[in-house]
Length: 418
Image 1: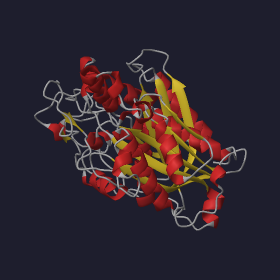
Image 2: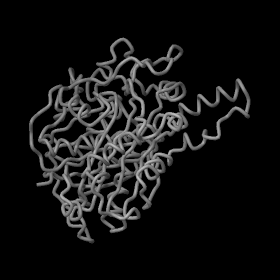
Image 3: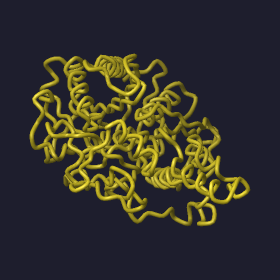
Image 4: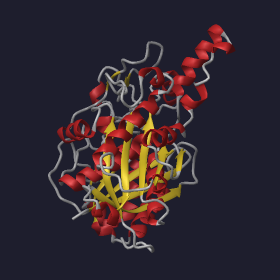
């Protein structure tokens, strides 16, 4: 894409954490293997809840060289994930050892859908049992969504733009779009961006379950998330983070940086239809994809892979299929599409961070992860959803979709760097 400024945007560092693993290597390897990261919930007592499964991160504690334990305990789990992946992505970019940029030319924009619900629940119990005086002064800083970008900025010493945004399950997609726009506008040279989320606790589970949004396959966790399958019964909650380092391409090349892919376009739209249900014909989602393609200045036929929003809900998967057909016409049948939520669960506000990383790795390694558990395709979801087995295929452009409650939509387009 030739932006008005002539600036191109490279992805030079990435890291992620989710139910499949604690770093990019583990997660990407699990995705290509078609491995499920969904299991029975262990870190929270779910005895009185209707749903007992999630894409839960196991055996994780934040490294002491990032935050000492006495400081780490002050912050909610989503902030631990954000810091963990941000530091690893920063190291992956090479900027930890060789950083030619002024601190004010480096910014951070994060997407967080719900913030620190576990901390809210824990502190409310303390309040009820022991009174207001026992509420920690770190309660508010621990749970507010913008602390994700704030802590990253403090830890890395960056003094450029710093904020978090919340647009439900499109949060990380919108954050990456905003970060991309900061670079092409010439306001920042480097952006730390993505999303983080961790709400595997009482109220979010109960709330989503009461909406009949969650899968009830408690006796079969690894097969519970099954996007585009006829027998899907809802999404599976996940948790984690996905962080990327975006950089002015010319300046990244000048310092000899590794380049995974370029971000070349983004789009946003609103369904203007319903507070939680997607538009049945996918009109808003299609508009979003078309806007991203127009922004990237490419032809529809150049898109070779789509990482679908694909949550495994009965309405959502049909709506996205219709949106893809409306967007691509006859080319829709030729595009290879997958929902990696079949393996990771739905990371909510962090989903777009992880799934943009998936698109970058697909372009970088020439491999497309599958949609697992796609055993009986829904006749209304009749596109190529890469069922059950990864493919070794090189594509030039990938598109990532993230859609959220309130009818908010985000699409990003990545290009293979060569």
